[in-house]
Image 1 (cartoon, each protein chain N blue to C red):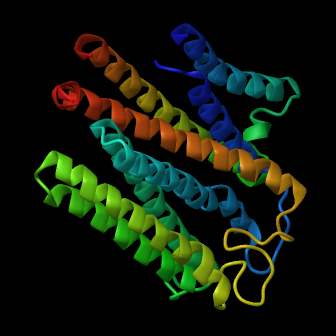
Image 2 (cartoon, rainbow over the protein chains, first blue to last red; image 1 turned 180 degrees about the horizontal axis):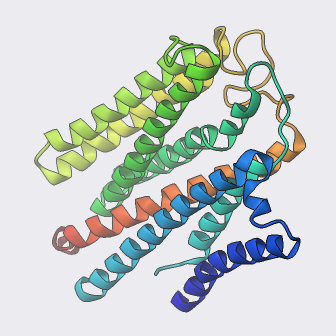
Length: 72
Length: 225
């Protein structure tokens, strides 16, 4: 289960990188991030914060899981 | 990690909200402009709060029917997360209001209503800490929690409908206190409802973490019963 979650999380940056590569193939470097008034930059930042929050919650969850194993 | 599928669902739904919420085309209504996107972030706070406080209420009723300390721990954790969401909802609402209604606090009936409701729930937390005896604390706070919920509900659901309000759904306006039915077009619904579910699941997740810590902390008391 844990491995599955890590795989999902690892896929996210891979997807982001792939969009950047895709943009460069079109001869317009970083055009995706700079289009639409750079709104994608905001999206990237908010998604990063959210991902960080979730990673933190997951780590707390697992810590509690370990303590539960020893205590209950 | 325990029972993970809904936790993954929470992450997926919120990641979807945070991308689609910024990127979809939104209708232009009044002076809202792009701030209408706040619907995906501010409003789900309140929907999530209602769900979490309702779960808390159910556990309080459960405790009174079957006084097991476990239910008191559940009720407390869900109430706390609900209160957190309420505080976040109030702050985000004030920020939004500054740039659309002109000031962060315009004594809108709904602002006053939720402020009172939050104070009532703060009193719940104060009350809990004021009673040193564990069983008494559980019982008194369960009763108070039921009382608080049934003041909270009219304050956010009934009062805003009776008076004129800057929020959607006041007196003489169609829609409900959360959103104006006609203004919410189909694409916005496709982001809004997943956002509500996602935030609610995240709130539940955080509550369960709190619950599990307290179950370990109080395991001697729980086993004694």
